[in-house]
Length: 320
Image (cartoon, rainbow, N blue to C red; front, top):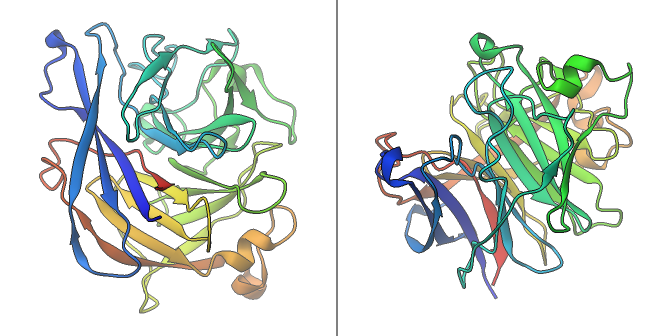
C-alpha cells in the first residue's frame, strides 16, 4: 500500500464552446522532501458547454468506499447568482476512473457563499467549505455546507452557532464566518466521532497570512487562525488557492496543496486540533495565536500548472 494524491484541472483548452474537459491526475505522495513529483492522467471529466462553473475545486476521499468525489465551485458569475446546477458532484474520479455524475437537490433557500471550494467526506456526508477571498466579489468569509451521499442527495447550510442564521446567509450573500476565508477542507476520519476537521487558507490577498482553521462540522464554525510557518520559523507567504487532506489510514499525516502543484506536509497542528472546542491549544500561548509548520515536499509536474494557464485546486489522498 502507498499514498497517492489526486487533483483535477480546469478546462484544458479554455474553449467553452466544445464543452469542458477536466483532467484528473494521480501522483505518489513522498515521505519527505524530494523535489519534482511525476503525475499520471487517469481520466477526464467531460462537462457540457452549458456548465457555467464546472471547476471541480473540492476533492475528498470517501472513507467507506475509498473512492474520490468532487464538488464544483460555489458561484456562477456574481454574489447574488445561484450555483451552477449542471455539475454539483462527480463520483469515482480516482483509479479505476469511472465518473458518475449526480446533482444533489439544493435546498432552495440555501445557496453556497463565495467563489472558492474545498471538500471532504466523513462517514455520513460530503462537506464543502465555500469561501470568498476577494472583497470586490462581496464580503470576505466562509460557510460550511453538508451534502448527503444519497442519490440525488441534498445540500444544506451548516450554521448552528450564534447568532441566529440570517436571511442573507441562507441566500448566500453573506458568510456565516465573516472575515475568515478558507478554500481547503480535511476531515479527521481516523479518530472517533468523525467531526474533527481543519480548513486551509494559503492566500494573502484576503487581508491576512497563510493559516489553518479548526472546523466544527456540527455547527459550521471556524476557530481563530492557526498560523502556518516555514521550517525555519518564518511566516509562510504564498498567495494561491489551496487544498487540504488527511491521510486515511495508518500513521496520520496532514498535507496541504497549492493550485500550481506544490505539496506541503503540515506538522505541529496536533495540539491545536486536539484542544477542546474551537479555542486554540497550548502551542499558541497567552496571545491566543496557534502555529503549525508547513514543509514543502515537492512540486507535482502538471500540464501548464507552472504558467498559471491551468489551475489545479482540488486535492485528496488515497491509500492504494
